[in-house]
Image 1 (cartoon, rainbow, N blue to C red):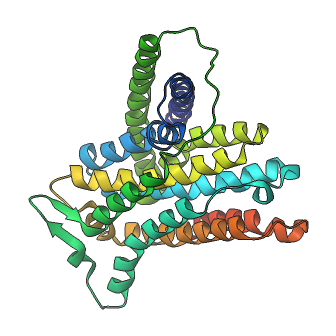
Image 2 (image 1 turned 60 degrees about the vertical axis):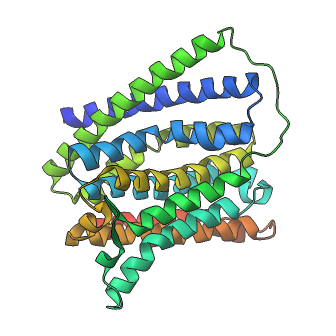
Image 3 (image 1 turned 180 degrees about the vertical axis):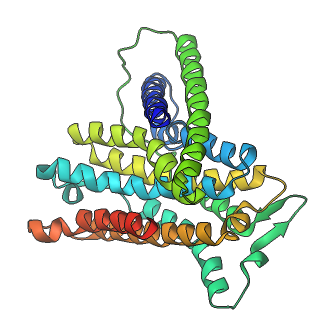
Length: 333
C-alpha cells in the first residue's frame, strides 16, 4: 500500500511543479517580443512534457526498459485525447467541438507520426518486410521511424512563429532574472519527481506482474499527463478552447519527438525493435498505436465537421474517444 501512496504523492508534486513552470512561461510570454505561439509550442510544450521526457530517458537508459518508455509516451498520448472528451462532458453546455476554431494540421501531423510506427509493424505482420529492416546503423543504432518523427516535428514548427495579439502586462513583480531562476528550480523538481515516479512504476509493475509497456501506459502515461488535464480544465473554464486543443495536440507531437530523441540517445540499441521483440510488449504497443491513431482520426473528424445542435450526434465524438480508451484497458487487462 505504501508504494501506491508514494506514487500519488510524487505524481502530485510533478503536477504542482509543472503548473508553476507554466505560469512563469506565461509571464515570459507577456514580457518579451518572442512569438507567443513559438513560446507555447516549443518552450511550454517542452516543459509540460518534461515528465514524459525524463521518465522515458530513465526507462531506456537507467532501467534498460525501452517498452516502458514507449508505453509512457503512447499511453500519455491516448490519455491526452481522453482529457478533451472528459472535459467536454464536464462542461456539457460549452459544446467545445462546435466552438473551437483550430486548424486540423497539427492533429494530422500527429496521425502521420502514428503511421511511422504502424507501417513497419503492419509490413512485418504481413510478412512483406521484417521490422528489423528499419533499424539503421549510422555510427549509432536508431530506428528509421525516429528520424521521420524528428523531421515531422521540425516541419510542424514552421506554423508556430506567426503574429498574434497579446497582453503586455502581467501580475508578477519578479525581475526576469528571478523568473528564470524559479523556472530552473521548478524544472529540477519536475526532473527529480519524474525519475522517482519511473522507479516506482517499475516496482509496481513487478509486484503486479504487469507488462512493462502496459505499466508505462497506465502509471507513467497518466501521471505525466496530469498537468495537461489541469491546464485543459482551467482553459475550458475560461472558454479558451483553441488553446486547450493546441495544448493537447502540441503535447502529443512533442511526446513523439521525445521517444525519437530517446532512441537517438540510447546508442546501443534500436529501442523500438527491442520493445517489440517481447511478445507481451509488442501486443500492448500495437494496441496503443492502433487505438491512438483511431482517436486521432475521431478528433480530426470532430474538428472538421459542421457545428450541430443535435446533442446525440455531437456527443458521439467524445463518447467514442472515451470508449476507445476503455477498450484499451479491457484489452490489456
